Every structure is written in structure tokens, then in C-alpha cells.
Image 1 (cartoon, rainbow, N blue to C red):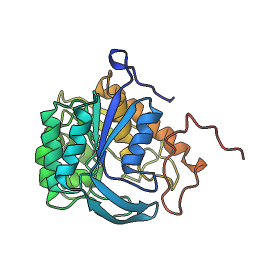
Image 2: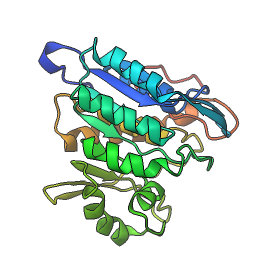
Image 3: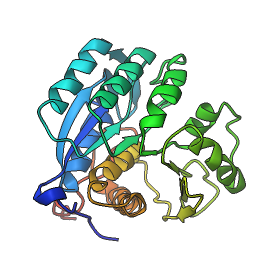
Image 4: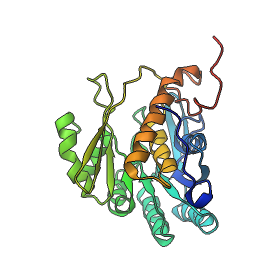
Length: 282
């Protein structure tokens, strides 16, 4: 595995938009997305859906922005900047889900990566229950790829959160039936294995297993945000399977280097800039 850079589309550096909530401690959300885009050579733009009071120990509170203002942010970017890929993270509520879908359709956005953020690592809900239907019906059909973890997949499919390898395989056709072109079902919650294996499936019926060594660290805050952001950064000029494989390599290296950071007393962030910053002197 090695750091990946983006093949510049039409001779330019890729511009990538993240639509998500904030993290003032810098490990997840908009902040993590911007770091991942930048580390992988893309220019980052953003539209904020919610302002979140959180740190490495958990989420304290969040305030969702007015859906009309979220729409204004998206329009402000897409009316002025060529956007080569979009990452969608925390949408907070049904109203925001609907306006995000409406504006992306209106602007004919492409290379859309949807991370269906529902619950923070600390267990705090980041999506209103009534918003699940809007996310499923409005946003998923627009997505080039969705990246649910196992609890999120259970909610999207309205089934029990009980998983093993066979159940992951069985869920892929149902997840694809929700409308996305590709599904990356993340297996990190299956903790009875030395590997963390994700399954990538497309409408062609082909399934690719993407194993990676399970990294022993408590600095795993923002892993889902970082992976989906890395996919979005790498999609312009690439096929989905290659972008996903390279993004997973990047996340694995970011996790392996995470203990070089000393940020907070809970679940610290991954090291987005592991390939760019010098290693600390022992």
C-alpha cells in the first residue's frame, strides 16, 4: 500500500464537495473530509448541514441548519465551481435530505459518494428517525456508491442488526435495490476476525472482498467519514473498484499511523497526513 494521488481530470486538479456536519475536534465530519481530500490531492469545497458539539469522547449536541440555507450553500458552490465528485455525510433530518437531493439533481452532480451517517461512534444519534425514509428514497438513488457499516445497513433494510459473513453477502442485492450503482458494505463491526473485510458490489452482480488487517488502536474516530471522503477524492478519472481499493489502503495506513497523534482522551482521530508529515522523534 502507498499514498495515492488523483489523475487530474482534463488536466486539472479535482474539485470535491463535502456535504456534512462539523466536528470541532477535527477527527470526523467536514473537517475529516477536507483533510482526506487534501491528503489525496483534491481541492476541497464544503456545505455544512449541522453544527455539532463533539470531541473524541462523544457528541454533546447538534444544531441542524435550515434546509433552505443548506441549499444556498450547495448552489453557491455548484453555480461557480466545477465539482468532480460529491461526498454526503451527516444530513441530520428529512428536510435537509430533500433539499440536498433536489440541488444535486438540479446541478446534475456526478460521482456521488453517500455515507449514510446515523449514529456517532459514541452511540449518539446523528439522524432523526423520520429522516431515514427521506435518505433512502431521495438520496440513495442518486449515489454512485453508498458506504454503510453494518448497523446502518440494518436500518436501511429494516432488518435485525445481526451479522456474519453470509448475512453480509445476502444483504448486497437488497442494498443495491435501493438505487445506488455500487455498495461498499463495511465489515468493521464483525470483530471476531483478525481482518476487517468490506464487500464491494455493483449492479453487474460481481462482488469483491476487500480485506485489511485490523489495526489495534483507540484512535479510530472518523474512520467512516475518512473512507467515504477518500473514495470521493479518488473517483474523478477512475473506475469505482480502483478508487475504493485505493481509498481503503489510505484509511488502513491512516489507522496504522494514528497513534503518532495525541488528540483528546477518547477515540482520537486517524492520521490523515501520515504520508506528508514527518514521523515524530521518539
